[in-house]
Image 1 (cartoon, rainbow, N blue to C red):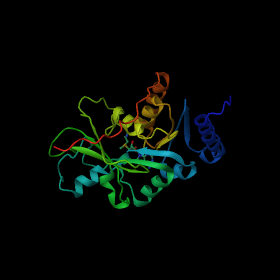
Image 2: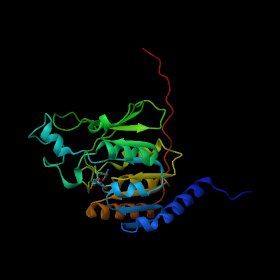
Image 3: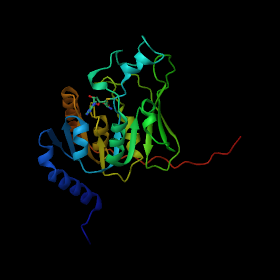
Image 4: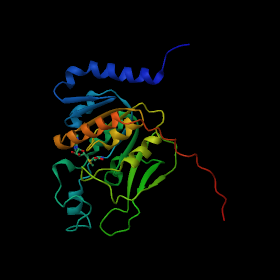
Length: 249
Ligand SMILES: C[S@@+](CC[C@H](N)C(=O)[O-])C[C@H]1O[C@@H](n2cnc3c(N)ncnc32)[C@H](O)[C@@H]1O
């Protein structure tokens, strides 16, 4: 019987590609943690040096402070983030969005309502329904996707009680839900990794992960969380249930 394992082969190919680019990437701090490769640096500089991945799953900065200034929320808190646009919260440009789309075969891009003008139409949006209905907070968050044949999907989860090490940290269960739609994806890339939630979900689900974060403090947090996840038992999720047609009343 052949020992050939396509998943293992894909992992090795990615390692070989990264090794070939090692010289160009050498100016960035890079940590290898199990099946995860984590870069400290600006993804605008690092992304063009990386091989294409199976899926980009990310939660980019939205420029929330900027929206507060310009939007109807002026002068009022829009989220947990303060009114000032933070250094780490500079909004995406159309070129950034194009680079994200080029970096992977599939994409799940959170906060899409903030940069819809840079995205084509899609069939499948992913919605995180927070179950809160308040004036100054988002009732839900929206991810734009590409490469899926699904309809719009909703994940219900209250953010209350979530322990956070990053001001806009996503719940781990939400990121695992995202990855459950990518059963065949071997390598997941998050170029705006923050505290590393996508990486923890990827490692827990046995996927290779590549993360980029330019803020040293959040990079260290991501390294620690992902390292810890590699020491815990792997968590295989069932793929999302197949939809079934309900009878109309
Ligand atoms: C919305 S947060 C991501 C939070 C993450 N989903 C989590 O659960 O912790 C976006 C992150 O992108 C980082 N960032 C912003 N611009 C960047 C860039 N050009 N390259 C790399 N990281 C960047 C910020 O420092 C911030 O931590």
